[in-house]
Image (cartoon, rainbow, N blue to C red; front, side):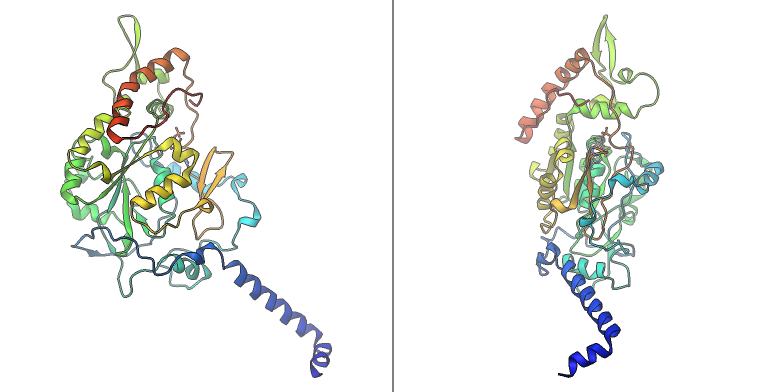
Length: 388
Ligand code: A3P
């Protein structure tokens, strides 16, 4: 009986109270999404842990970082690129959870991001994060989508990765610094996370396979390959001097031929590289994926890598947003309200190939491809198309 009287007397107060209740209700509603369906007790299949651990600090998941050129060189320009977002890249409003990325796991604040993220990932109790040698390495091949793969993998809260290409095994000056130096390049992680490093030149370097084996014979290797002709065009597209065909064509007795001794050409002879790795690692320890498929349809490819790395199955369609302007998918972190895309150094226009040169290139690579398919027991669709 007294309630209507009070409401009438304190109309303004009642209005504010109703608004407050509505806001709390909406907040609870929007924070209850698919993330809640992840079993908190999920523990990822533990990969072999590095025994001699060093204490360290650092953030859990690094932000979208720079791309690699064909020579596997990270560029600062790219860092700038990725921060300059095209407004057209924004997702529709309905997409936004209303939560900005407030910093990573190391943040002391308990924001709604932290609460949501904790449901996805729980560090082992009473553990201090430490730097560890990588348990998974993306070994190559440059220009096949290695950067996209790493950035997609970093969506996963159980994955941490080196912020740059470390080039430990392929560069003498780094290799001579030893494994402690290599470990120091990694971010701190918990024992139930997977530390990943990608240096695409490893796949071709003679030292990589034997030395990685010596470091950790149970390491998981991820190798992105791509139609070698498309890969070559991608590599040629970043060359600035001279006509593109000079990088891979020569005249032999008056006829056009593919250059015999050329690094850019050789990178696409995947079978040659695979043989070196199979001397040390079984095929089951090398996850080979087609970069073309990763670019066209990342969800399936990423779920397979997730499985290969023994990670809890968290990645799904909502982590990928197709950007029609760029022509590829951008990643969506669990913690972010907007997708982040790779910068302008990815998705460059490839040089036009006339039919003669295209046929020459495909004929050149076909026998290598066939041997490769036979060795890995799978085929990829690497026949001429109109995509270069
Ligand atoms: P192009 O720039 O020639 O198109 P890498 O990172 O190994 O150097 O590979 C670069 C290539 O990755 C790019 O070659 C691009 O085609 C491909 N790629 C695949 N998925 C991508 C994505 N989501 N964003 C950007 N590039 C992607």
